[in-house]
Structures are given as structure tokens and as C-alpha cells.
Length: 318
Length: 305
Image (cartoon, rainbow over all chains, first blue to last red; front, side, top):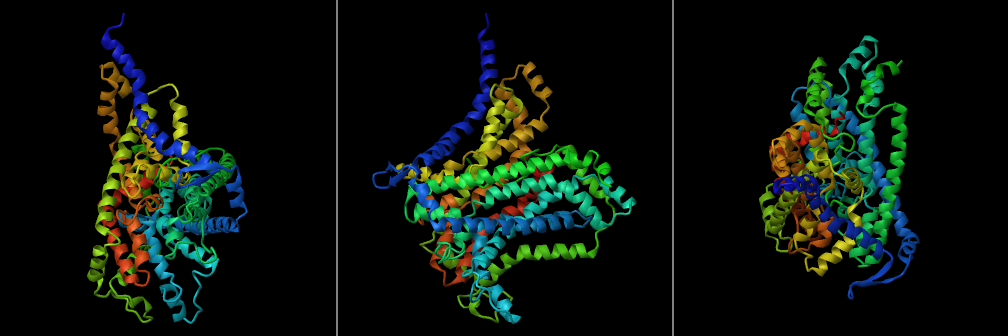
């Protein structure tokens, strides 16, 4: 026969873990799981805001969206902005990380300085850059005309508007990613560089053959997180002008901006819900492609993570 | 689903490294003895100037007047109107800047605190208490990180309008009270920083689970909890999509107030950019005090053990 305190202690051992994780799961059920399921249901409905209920319309909302040229423009814009903000950003971040990785004075000062843009809200960044990219009196166009060049139609032309919006994203995240890459660079054992120096490899060759391959797992990680975030972009295109329609001809309309305007401009909740699911599916598909490529890349390495450079990296190099 | 932008720290694979790894990083930097040449400083200088320039630019415009921006020969020195412009922003009844400031402070603090508490609890259970279904549930938590906020906003909006909570800062706080990223972050940290023997010893001594959590877990979790607080705070402060949907001009957060400011003064950018600077000051103060921790948080999350 167990004593009361022994029973209590067993109960404590058995149920405490569930008790500790329950706040997360209860809240997730209410503000996460329920909305996701409800979004799926509403996406098959024509939602009536007054009656606060919907009538079933099957796949109509999805079909409507897929037949809407605006959606395809938004999809193109989203990917275009995503690419323009990811690729140059990574190249720049690697470059900055390589500078920070040198034996410099005032490490903390430089590291903090490159992170400064991160604390500014995307909305604030967007307002400042929209001003600098003004069509008539913006800083950039003033400078261009100052040296005798034609002003750029930042808002009229889709490509240039994507460049402008990508700059905002790059401004905020390049330093952040540079610090992530810097940490990865510092994890490379310095003996490799010493050995390479002995073998007569120059600084550039060392960077190409030692630093870059060691960064691969971190780069893959940064690409994946940038993808999830980049495909959801809203703040910057919303604030690029004061109407928030994504331009007169949808030059910089993105999927999430389109979703917002469908849901809270036209108050078509069924269609907005369908759009949300389409966005989620796009993110999943891109995520799976990422995962597939990552797996292959990592398999090529024969190992994973920081252990890559430590294990036999020297032997693998000629 | 997290309502916040989870900071893209590279913890997905490894989490915070243990102290040993970090020490090694510092040591090896010193081994590389050659001092950096001047061109390294030139390069970094260019980077820092471009990081600061937009701040300076908004001060330049924000301290001028409506015509400053139209003047092709504008001065590169600030004008004298910043206080006047700032006063205009602060006293604008349509923007409610003071309410926005309070809402941002209040909601971000509450969200960050709640995320830290719930994540530490759950992280402790996942990292150190073996229980049936634990692995599967943790995988589930990680999977939810890929779910975008957009997937929940329509039902959340319907829910909060039914409750009559649209326009209420509570509608911004409640969906953000937990974070899958936070749970994952704390799990990673605690599983690496607390030896199992310590928990076993506490159990043998007759400590209850709660007592073990309090005396071992919470103490060990402190550094990671501080980082999590900072990043969650910055994320909550800057989030825009959901607050923009659910709040109105009576009771905005600072980013929402900035969007209202843009709508009202799109002809006078000196007011808008003065407002942008005002709204950024609180986070600049935070950065002055905790910027170092932010830097080491990002770098700690990135190193692969």
C-alpha cells in the first residue's frame, strides 16, 4: 500500500510535464489551430458579414482567385521582390561577415553598428525609403539628375518598384544575417587557414575553398528563413505609397497585400481565406523544394553542420 | 502559430551552443594574429554609414518643413523645425501618438514576458522531463513555425469582432502570448546546458518537479530567457500586419500610428519623418542598453555545435 505522499510524488512525476507544456498547447489551440481550420472552412464559403455566417460555394473562391490576373501579378511581384532582396542580401552579408571576421579593433562597436537597422520597424524603414525613392523630389532621383542622368520611375515601373522595396528589406536584414554568418565563420578551425597558408593558398583562394564551403549549412538556414518571411511580405509594399493598393497597375502588389485588400478593403472574407491557404501551400511547396535541395547538398558534404569542416575537410581538398 | 515575426536565428538545427563552443570562437579569433588592414575599416565604414544614413535622412527631412524635400539645393545640415514637427505629431488627435506609445510598451512587454514564461516551462518539460509523446509534440511545435500569420487572420478577426474586441490592444496581445520559436529555443538551450545528473540528484533528494524546475531549470534558463525576451520584444514592437487589421485610430500601436500619419500628411513629409524618428527612439534606447546582448544572441543562435 502506497502512502499518500508517495502517490502524490508519482502523480507529480507523471503529470508535471504535461502541465508545463499545456499553456502553450491550450493557447495554440485557440489562436493557432482553431483559426487554421476555420480559415479552411471559410475558404469554401461566401461569407456574409452581416449575418456573420457563410454559404457553401465549394471551390469557387479558389477558382476565382486563380482566374484573377491580379493574383498572378501579385505572385510574380512577390517572387521578384523575394529574389531581389535575398540574393544581393546574402552576397553582401557574406562580404560584411568576412570583414568583421578580420582581426579588427573595436569588434563590439562594429558588430552593433551593422545591427542598428534591425531595431527600426519595417513600417518606419518603408516610410523613409519611400521618401528617398520619391518620383519627383526623392533623394535618389535628385542625385541622378544632379549627375545628368534620367530620373527613375520608382513607382510606375514594376521592376524599379521591386528594387525600391527590396532595398528596404535589405537595409533591415543584411547586418543581422551578416552576424549569423560571422558566427559560422568563427566556428571554422583556424588550423585550416594556417595549413592553407603553408600550402601557398592566397586570401581569396582560402575564402573560396575553406570559408564558403563551411558556411553552407548556415547559408541554407538563412535561405529557408528568408523564404518563409519573404513570401509573406506586407509592411514595405503597403507603405510604399499612401493608398496601399500596390500601385495603379499592381506594380508592387504582393500576395499578402492582395489578401489584406480582399479581406479588409472589399470585406470578402471567403476569398481572403482562400488566398491565405494558397499562400500557405506556396510556402509549403517552396519549403519542400528547399528541404529537398538541402538534403542533397548536405549529403554531398557527407556530414552535417559545423562538423563538416572539422571532419576530413583538409583531406577532401586537393 | 506565432503572431510575431520570429527572428530567423539559426537554431533550427543546433540551438544555442554551450559555453565551451563560444569560448573556442573567441580564442581562435585571437590566434589569427595579423591585424586588419585599413581597407577593412574603409569597407566597414561604408557599411556603417549606410546603416546610419536613413536615420540621418529622416532627421534631415523631419527637421525641415514641407518645402525642404522639394528644394533641389537642400542643405545637408538639419533645419530647426524638429521640435515643431514633433509637437505636431504628438498633439495630432487623429494619430493618438501617446496612446500608441503606451500600447506598444504595454503589449510588447506583456507579450515578451508571457512568451518567456510559457516557453521556459514547455522547454524544460521537452528538454529534461521524459514523458510519453514528448518527441512527437516537440516535432509538432517546430512544424507550426512554418505556418504564416496570414492563415489565421480572417477567423481571428471574426472571433474578436464577435467579442467586441476590435480596436482593443488585447486583440493584439492574446494571439502572441505563446511562440513556437520560443519553446524550441528554450528546449534547445536547456537540453544542452543542464546535465541530467543534476535533475536526478534533485529527485533523489526528494524535490518535487516544480521545485526542481524552479531551482535548477529557471536558474539555468536565465541567459537564454533574457535573449528570448529581447527578440520577442523587438518583434512585438515592430509587428504591423495583424495590429493594422484589428486596431483603429483610437488605439493604435506605433507602427499603426505611423501608417495613419502617412495617410494624413502625405503632402508634408517633414511631419511623417519626424514621427518616424519619434517612434524609433524607444527601440534606439533599448538598443543602446541591450544591443550587445542582441548581437551575442544572434551569434549564439547561429553557431553550429
